[in-house]
Length: 112
Length: 250
Image (cartoon, rainbow over all chains, first blue to last red; front, side):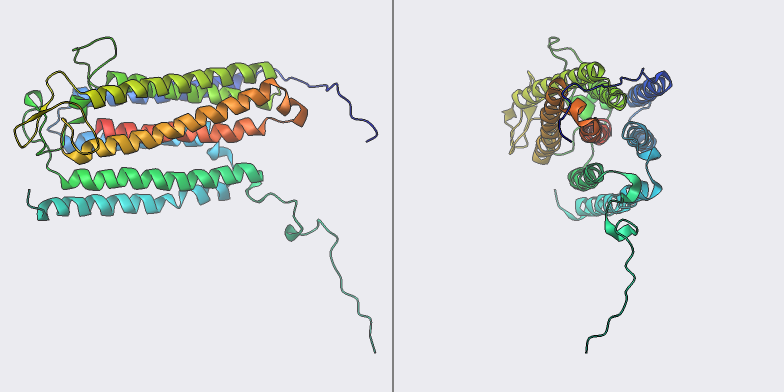
């Protein structure tokens, strides 16, 4: 501890090609799903409303899973961390269902 | 009379309560970032769910999609509102520009994760390169959003007919040409709140870039700050995925 070396020996490791390739694969999947969403938006007629909405929601969940799991690395963290982030999301799902249901009934009750 | 009794105390650092243990195998900063993001997710959920409530309480447009016109009596079809592209005035290109914005943000998420990967290898040059790309991606997204807002506020050539028979162009927080007043209010609040997150993210990314260039992390011996800010940046991208679906597609 007498003196601090000012010249640091930093060992730079070579790029982890397998990991980088995987990241680009995930990016490709995200782009692919977005293109698929566009295909549904313009290919499936507006009359099939439920089909459209549910495919959009499903694809969004797929994209979210890849972003959180791979990019944010949550899939590889300790399981207790993963669950302490995911389980509270149950409240969001419940809130969504309850509020949209409520909204439909506000629309019925309100004279326009 | 004091009597001496022996109490066996474990040596410091031997039990989980002595500190120095990382629960969940993650550093303090990373863990706190995760829990901050969880609370931020609740905030965005509240905004999007309220949008869901208000939208489902309004009438939906029932007629043929091709015959759609703006009216305050029903909620507009998003692709009929967001159908303009910069430099192509009058071109009908539904959702093309917002699709481009989505692509830009996803790409900047990819460059961010590549910066994190470079940080793990202590490769300062590569961290600098990828952080710079991430900053450029963020700024491009913000510029796109500025254009999108301007177009939304100024309005289309024909404007929209209000229920009192007057013609109105563009949007403010009280009236808009596209549909019920709440439509524009939610557009401003949700994309604005997200845009401000992107702006903060660009600031944080610049800070990280600056510290990388000046060698702060190299001297520190690790690039964990890149990882922590990276988590925030991916979250911003994640929120956009949801905004894109629930505001523009559904």
